[in-house]
Image (cartoon, rainbow, N blue to C red):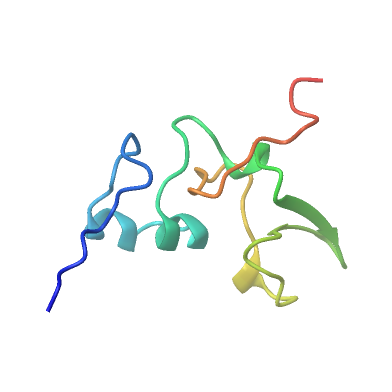
Amino acid sequence: MIEAEQLDLFPDMPTPSPAEMEKEPNKMRKHLGPGPEGTTCGTCRYLYRKKWGGTYFKCELYGDSNGPGTDFRKKWQSCRKYEAREDEGE
């Protein structure tokens, strides 16, 4: 049997320990790993505001169940799929 070598696509990104990731509130970060240092969900292009009897923040990539399980916080550290908002800095 031939063993395949696993490539690290993001060699400069730190890899948190499993214990650290278990406490992680950001579901995307927990499964995908951390994003660029110093970035938050609040500056990510995928975070959007949903108004429905209140204001809630959701991630386009994670989905929306119309419940608290898919709510995100702007202050959470970003995940590996982070992309800066185009209007950032304007």
